[in-house]
Length: 413
View 1 (cartoon, rainbow, N blue to C red):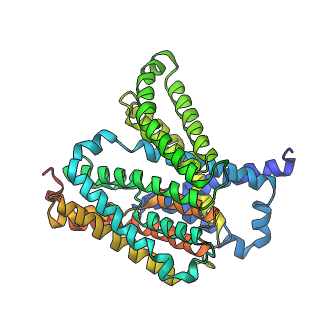
View 2 (view 1 turned 180 degrees about the vertical axis):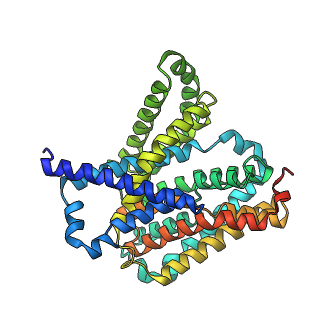
View 3 (view 1 turned 30 degrees about the vertical axis):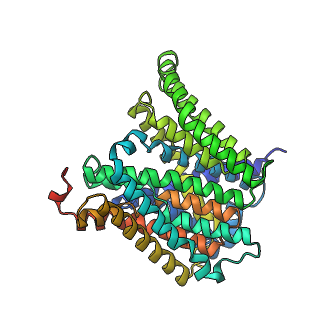
């Protein structure tokens, strides 16, 4: 089946308009010292069913018609999701994790388990928002909510620490390394959740989890070694940066396709390969920056603007579920990570700053929520609450850390 002339025109209009509006609002967000993702999601809300669709329903359906062009647009969005998790994986530095020792272990364990435990009981405390006759799905919903409360957003955290000139300090390294451990474990748990949710594959969910565990071990050991040994040859024999970029994205898509095939979402494979590639000493900072610029300025805006196209944020906003998720997100991560940092030997103020630093959820939370929405683990009301939580935590972390820490407190200890 081929796209008609009108459908091709509509698709190109959609892509161009989404990129243009997304960039305008991203720049406006930067002007008020907020992450670009905030502006991009606001752009999607304005041109989506929340505002444009309500005021001009016929114009909205003409501009975003159902049919083949919408499927192609969804394909672009899925590729963007994979690429976003790929660059999130690039931020994970396994060497840095080992260097932080018990301090990172304490902070990551408490920063993971306490918010996870609080989030796990959300479906029980608010059953009206989580209806599931299948006990297996109800457990998957609880595990998902625990994961959504526990996960962090490495790119957002790194940017906040850089803006506060804390990135290379002892406190900054603790926050980054702890967030890395937390995210690795959280994505493994999310793979379990998707297996329990019954994603389509040729394997039952227990076999899927076993294959996932083996794949994770192999890619982080043998795969990591092969990538590290092959990159010098690629850098020497292939055109730079085209060779290393093409090979990196090709292997990212192959890894993503494998985890999709076995019943775990493609984003998990992309994230794991990002960890492997980013950990290689032969993948230069310049190459990493090129990948970041390409994805963050082309594919990321398409994804975040598309978030606003998926649901009506006004109709699906519920104060109770939003307030509950915000309260649990703040309390769980601040208490958990803060307590972990304190047990690791940091003072109370640095521990509190650690808790607020790891509280930023950002793009990762939104990706997690979108996947859960697509596979009916949550409804649109919970999804809207998770998006709001991701934005609020990302916007609040930097200013609160700056308030807690006086300038002299940011120096190396």
